[in-house]
Amino acid sequence: MPGTRAGRDGLAALLARPERAVIAIDFDGTLADIVPDPAQARAHPGAAAALGRLAPRLRAAAVITGRPAGVAVALGGVAGVPGLERLVVLGHYGAERWDAATATVRAPAPHPGIAAVQAELPGVLDRSGVWRGTWVETAVETKGGRAIAVHTRRADDPQAAFDRLRAPLAALAERHGLVVEPGRLVLELRPPGMDKGVALADWVRETGATTVLYMGDDLGDLAAFAAVEELRAGGLTGVLVCSGSDEVTELAERADLVVDGPRGVVSLLTALADRLAAS
Image 1: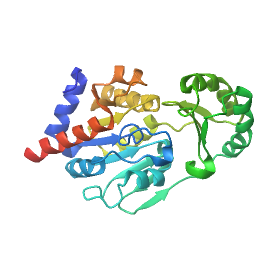
Image 2 (image 1 turned 45 degrees about the horizontal axis):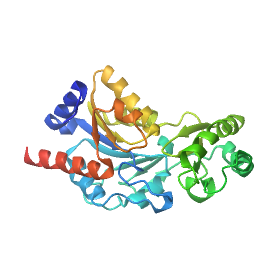
Image 3 (image 1 turned 180 degrees about the horizontal axis):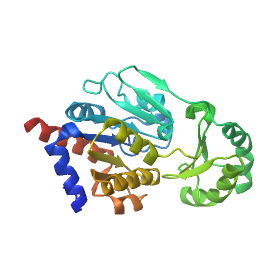
Image 4 (image 1 turned 180 degrees about the vertical axis):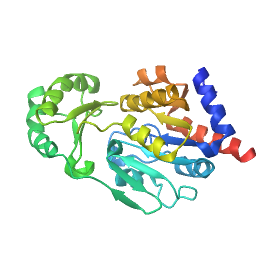
């Protein structure tokens, strides 16, 4: 049960009128456990099936992620899952869109600053003295040419490396017209105007929903939380769920409900599906 009045109102509205409600979920740390190598991430066991049970009872369902949409679809195993025939995956913070109905991805051309940052990044990391153990998720390999993620989880001192890189990476991004989005021991350089809040708000308006439930786990989800708060101020109801961890407390402080990581997310999806099936 949500610990806030707004959260309880949102949950009550979802259960009373599920046909007017939507659910949007982050991928890494929410649907999928955080792992040292992001390429090895997979949806938590039972996550896709639980979402597939719930989604048909709602107006719409979406995954909103910083990953390329196609990568999230593949790692999440959501294509072809019963009940997810209308699922939307908004990748790169909404810059890309995959629709289950067509199994296609719509994406814009890459930002020119990405290639420039990619060329300069090794020198920046070397001068910062944190190259060893720092892992770069490059545009060419996994980010579709639309972002570069610098992970410090495998560095000798992950938090120290993260803190030391924030300023030089911010300066590098600014020189090439990009911004830096911090996450759980990751700094992502990407074009401005892309965030989960914009993606979520646009999608909710597209669906015509009156209730939205959003689940996230890290600093990149703060924009989506803010979007839900703005939607609530405008008359919609909403529920903010944090997939809890020891690494990010700011999101938990703003959430209506905190669950025990991806395992707790699956439990919540299952409980909602069970409740609606019984009504």
